[in-house]
Length: 532
Image 1 (cartoon, rainbow, N blue to C red):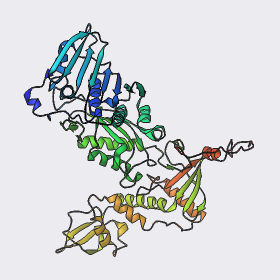
Image 2 (cartoon, rainbow, N blue to C red):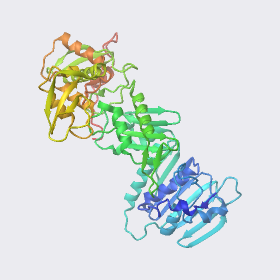
Image 3 (cartoon, rainbow, N blue to C red):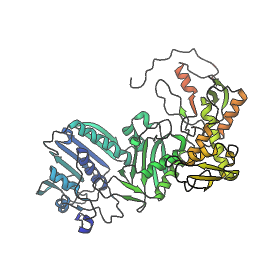
Image 4 (cartoon, helix red, strand yellow):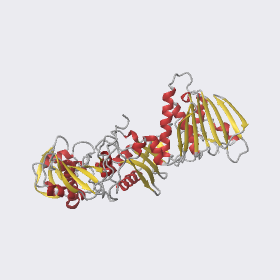
């Protein structure tokens, strides 16, 4: 039932509604439809929505006697408790704002009502009369932003992007968009993978792997592996209980921690995270845009754990680049990297290896870095800190810190500390200890893993170092034992792979080396880069 909000609730909500574009108007009407339980929504734009916007749904509809109240300020059927907001809208201001800025027509009928109602509103004038109507609600907005000289094409593009975003979070909604009477988006509610095709394009959507974890805290989504990343999180979308929201810093940190070294520093994956959280696990900012949320520590920990579970068993080796993009390759075995057989060395920098039906190219420096890094991590976990044979004095530029992840120390006068304990693997290098200690204090948020990554880099095999067959095979075997063999500690790829079927296609053959009879080869077809 629609009713005016009491004064004590009105005072907690920001006044006014944000209608800066046609997109904002469509968002408000779409959210009303979703809150009404709509399974089908049709959006029409005429003149980019500046002449006319139509949003029609098959939701529960508005009773005839409540239609006039729907366009009054702070009138809503949704809000019961600000601590338990369960709908996309709750402020009761959207229709009132549209009524003040344009001519508003609302035709609606609940399924149990005989006949519908038609409401016309503009400014202070409101008219209501009975009218035939199918179940659901149809809202028309006429003359929005009249006389402002806006670009219809830009407004329409904004609405199209908005609808694609909402499909990522409501992938079972049947949604249609018509521009000037022509269909621009027809989505039958076919699920998240198809919604990702609409939002990201077919090629990128194929490179996303699924996420799913249920319970009181639940996650559904799609994410890219290390072969696809961006320097900005502009293609990583988040929704909380169906509400599209901006990415909080806590979520970005949880995603980065889950990926660890799988992505280079400053890179972010592509995809969508749909979180379902209980009340109290997040806090929504009660401003007009309703886009900012803060997740509790328990929700952030759940997200990180769910991502780590999804990564297990995924093949995170980056695909060898080709003249045109290849389909996503499946892991050779469910457990990840298979045993690699050494074939040779290229330019004394890359190892060539084979496993089952794939050729692997391994960067020997990155592989050795990964091996040494995980050895250092394991030794630190097993051995901890041990007293140094002789304490080491370190000069500092400023005040000594409270703690260090690699050292136990004590203040020793102004701007000095004395190192007392360190990991046993650092004991043989007393001259390096002051520099390593000072390095551990640099920058805000530098982690133990970053320090160990730099320590692993120094002794690792360099490009240009020749390896005998036995040495190359030993390096591959040690890499196989690593927890994360796909990337070095800095996030660069350790290996690339190319499947035999792709070699067959590129060479114009019809079968591989294991076939009993080799037909005559046929010339390969000419190919070009996609989009050229």
